[in-house]
Structures are given as C-alpha cells and as structure tokens.
Image (cartoon, rainbow, N blue to C red; front, side):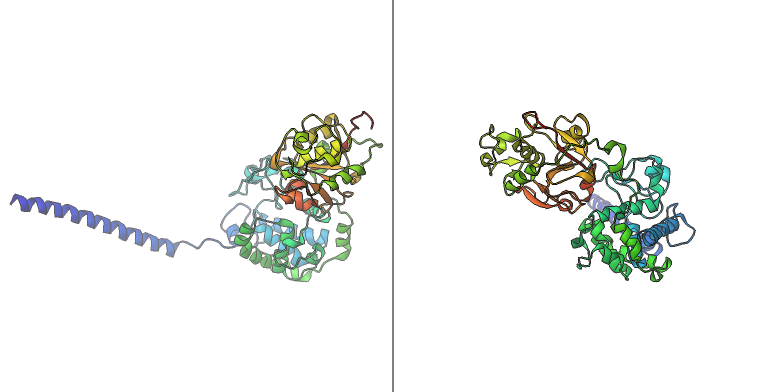
Length: 443
C-alpha cells in the first residue's frame, strides 16, 4: 500500500505540472493570435509613421504643421531654385523617411517627439552624434556637423528657404556625385532638376545625400512612395523646371547661414600673401610615396637623411599621415615648420590665430599650392584631414594631393577634394592657409 500511495503521489505531481504547462502554452497561442488580429501592421512608409503620432501631425493633411513644412520645402525648390515639381517631390519624399516633417530643425539623436523644446536646435537642443564625429547633425537636410549651417538657437534653422538655399550652394560648389545616383544613370544636378518622374528623381537625389547603402536600401520603398505622394498633393505635374532660376543657382546662389562665413572662420589675409607653385611641384613628385601611418618625427620617418631638404633624399618606402605629408612638402619647399610635426588641429589653430607657421587665406583667394585643412581646432586622426591644392580652388571637385583620403593606407595620391574629404568632413570648419615664412627668415 505504501508503494502504491508513493507512486500515485508522484503521478499526481507530474500530471499537475503537465496540465499547468499546457495551460500556459494555450494562453500564449491565444495571446499571439489576439495581437495579430487586433494590432495594426508596422508602418512601412513615413506617411504612415507621421499619421501614427507626433505633434507635427500627418504631413499629407493640409493645415498640419508637418504639411506646411513639407510644402514650404517643395515651394523653395520649385520657386527659389527652379527645379521641376517631380524633382522637388523626390526631395520631399527622401527627407520624409529621414526625420519626418514634424519639425525642420530636428537635432540628431532626438527622435520620437516633434516638440521644438525637446528636439529643435533653434531651441538650443544639442545634437548627439551617432558616429565617430564630434558634433552631430541637424535640420531636414541633416547638416553634419550642424555648425556648418548655423549655431544653436539661430532662427535660420526654422527657415526652409534658407536651408534649401544652403544646399543649392553646396551642390553648386560640387557637392553632387553623379556616380551615387541610384538609377545608375549618373545624372547631373541639372538633369535631376528637369526630371519628370518623382520616383526617379528620388533615386537621383542620392547623388547629394550619399547615404549608407544598407540604410538607403531598407528605406527606399518608403522614400519612393512618399515622393509620389508629394508629387500628387503638391501639384508637381503642373510645375516644370525654370532654367532662369537654375542658371542663377549655377552662377552662385547665396546660402542661408554657412559656418564658413561665421566670425570664427573669417580670414585675416595680407595683400602680399601669395601661393607657392613649388609646393605643388614637390607634392606631385611625391605621388606614389609612403604608406599611411601616424609617424613622428616626420622627417625621421620620411627622409633618408633627415637633415636634407632635397626631394631626392625622401624615402619612398617611409611612413606618414596626411598632416605629416603636408608638413614634409612645406619643409622641402623651404618654409619654417615646428619640430617633429603637426596635426590638423594644431594647423587650424595656428593658421587662424598665432600665424607662427601658417596663415589663413580667404576661400576665394585659395590657389594651387595652398593648404586646405578640415575638422577644426580639436581635430586629429579620422576627425580631420589636410591636403595640398593641386589647382586653384573652384569647389568640391578641385583636385588635391594628399596622403590617405580615398587612397586609404596606400601612398600619396591626387584626386577630387570631395572624393578624399567627403561631404561631412569637407564642410567641417574648412579653411585654406599658406606657410608664413621661409626657414631662412625671408617671406
């Protein structure tokens, strides 16, 4: 009897456990089907996302803040820049999947709200960088760093015409890489501006945006759907490109609030300052030299004889980085340089301040042989870059000679500024400068 009672008890316990397990399983299955039947699908386009929440409202509904923001952007491109309605709709559709139209001054890293006081740079909200860069981006065009457009609390952040004008100027300066056109057609900006299909225009807009391929691919369907929606609700079919306005952009439209025009980047140039063609000659002779590495002292790592100032004594198999290369060229040209080397941050600080070795010159006066530095006073490594101008500066497609850049860890190379610096770094506190004086004390 004791044996039977003992095993009956064990069987009862096992049965109880099994019944409890089955009940839980049934509950989970029922809950799953209830969620499937009662919950709406995840929004696939930004129109659906906008309609699902946010104080800006649904951007497709007239009268909402989001609608007015999107429409003002559409109007800026068609009425101020002169693009076709399809081109403008392509831009609106692209932007809508990035940060939405609830606010036009959204700071990077502040999503989920359209409250200006919590997400707008015009209210002093500081962008939070999502990558390996010092300052985050802001605005509907995601200006990165945000300082290249305007400072915190500047009312220009709320002016869509000014934001658009800034982009138009940037494109005019060469910030348009036709090879990144997602149609594969390598369309120029003027061809884009005359586009008649909003979806095609949206794909072509990547020549300006140049987004990460995985991110663009994931969001492209929504972008195209939004472009077509913008084309319909804003009457894009009735608007053709205006060549007279587009011509004005091509001849030099002014931008709203470029950081390069701010007081901190103003130049103090003497009229007797001239570029040195010898800098270009030396830089060209060094194309194909070196392997990229941060090596200091510069002369010890690049010269067979560190006391020599002859190109013939340069060690082709040496190592240096971008600033080390510019340092070496400046040294070989006979100019005064600091002991050991410099880096982009110290170059920027000296050129804009003490002028011990370098002196800033205005962008309009930047010539072949001058030095371009990007990244600002605190830059170093990947946060900054510098090169020698191979020709007079005429925009983002100006040829430069540099170590690194698009060449990676390879040797000194020559190519377009935009390809080697990129749009974000290339517009980050960009300055131009020249050596101050010869090592022998002459100017």
